[in-house]
Image 1 (cartoon, one colour):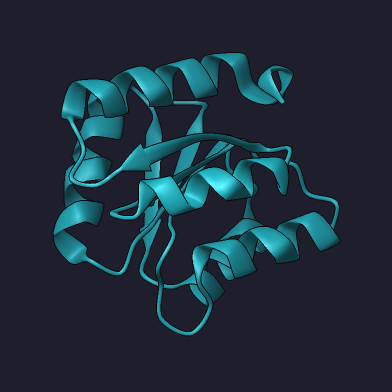
Image 2 (spheres, rainbow, N blue to C red):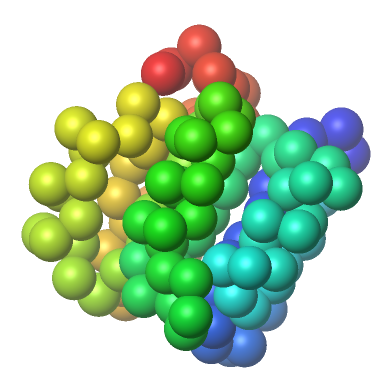
Length: 125
């Protein structure tokens, strides 16, 4: 397992489900429940892919992406949300935002998106 995916969602059930799907695909899955914890985790080890929820307590998904951009970190990112149509506007703002995953999501779509993002890495940006 040389590829790492960081999952950021405040709902434990979603984190557990995504961890299982990502591990089944052969990647290392690390999950946290807040944007602040995501930034801490990224400082420890930069993931190959970031799966982050749009709405998070205290520091939401866009705020985390703003911080990454300020630091010059380019991490391929998939943003998840029940408000996927609102996130579409953010695609222009972040070069590394490679896709939007609407909730509720289809597991097969998650697998395909994760595999494509991890295999293409920063070449997609």
